[in-house]
Image (cartoon, rainbow, N blue to C red):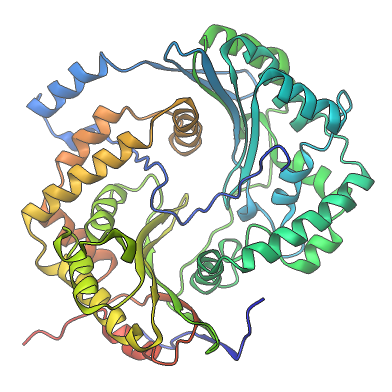
Length: 491
C-alpha cells in the first residue's frame, strides 16, 4: 500500500486460472490502428498508391460478414496449423456508472467459473485436453474473450466462447470466491506504480467522467457487486451489433460464418439508451507525495484524439520521435531520440516512456518517467522543451527515422495468429473494417516535418496538461510553472 503524506487535486481556474490479463490501455506498444480516408491521398494514381495496390496482392484477405442480428464475423486465413478466435465486445468500464464501476472486469472473471453445460472443472479440463489456451481482458472501452487452439478444434473453441458469454451460471458461491480474488488483484495492482500513476492520470484528466474511473473499480463496489449487476450488464451490452467474432491463423471464413450463425444467431439485434458517455479532458493534476519511496513516478499528458481522427497517425509519429529509454539500454547518447540523449548525458531519470492512448472520441498523448527525487524538475524541463521543439523545429531526417521505426514496430507486433486476431477484432470495433498495412504505410509516408509541427502545435503548444505524480515529488514544479512550460515567449 502507498504511504500517502498528502493528496492534492488542482484544477486551474483559467485559460484466471485460465490466464486472465488486464489490458494496459496506456502502453504505446499496442497495435496502432488508424482510420484511412482514401480521399486524403489526393487525385491521380501516385507511385505510393500503385505500390499499395501491388503489395495488397501478397497479403491474406480479411473477410468480413455481418449476420442478420448485426454481429460481425471477420477472419484472415494464413494456412497455419493453429488459430486464434475471439469475441471483441464494445463494452468496458466506460459504460459503467459510479455505482456499478468494476462490473465489466468482475464479469470477465466470472465467465470461466462454469456454465449451465460445463462446470469450472469441466471447462478447464476440456481446454487443457485440447492443448488450447483461453484468455480474457477488460479495457476502458472493450471486453475480450479469446482462445488459441489447433485449427481442427476451431468448432469447439467457438462453441466454448459462445457458452461462456451466453450461459454462465454466475453462481453465488463462485461470485463470493472471485470477489476475494479481485480484491487481491487490486492489492497487486497497487504495487505496480505505472498502473497506479496512469489511473491517477485518467482520474484527473477525465475528472468526474466515465474514463476517469478505474477498470477494476473501487473496493466498496467489488464488495457489493452481485449476480443481478452481472446479469444486467450482460443483457444491456452483449448485443449482436456490439460484438465481433474474429479469427486468424488456419481458419476457413465459411466455416467460421456457419459456426457464428449457429452459436450467436440468437443474440439480440437491438439496444437502446447505450450511447457512449461523453468524457471531457481537464488540464489538472493529482500529486501523491511519499518521501519514503526511492523514486518519483510521473506522467504528464495533453489531450489527443480518438482512433478515427485524421491527426492520430501524425501524433503516433511524434510519439515515436520522443521514444522510450531505460538505463538498461545503455548507449543513450547515441540514440536517435533527442530526449534520450539529454537524459542519458545528464543522468536525469531511470526510464521514460512516451505514450499515445486512444479512445473512441478522445485520447492522452504524453510521457511517463521514473526519476531520482533531485532530478524531477530538470527532467520535466527537458521533456517540455522537447515537446516544444516538435512544434517548432523538428527536422525531416528525424521524422523519416521515426516513420521507419513506427512501421517496423507495427509489423513486429503482427507476428502470430493471436496479435493478428487482436488487430482484426479491435479494428472492426473501431472502424468496421480492417485497414491493410500497405495502406497504413502509405499514409505514414505522406507525413513530413511540417505535418508534425502543425499537428503538435495544435495539441501541445500552449495547452493545459494533465499531471499525475507519486513518490518523493517535492521538487516537482508547481502546476502553474508546468503550464507555463507549454509555450515559449518569442521575442
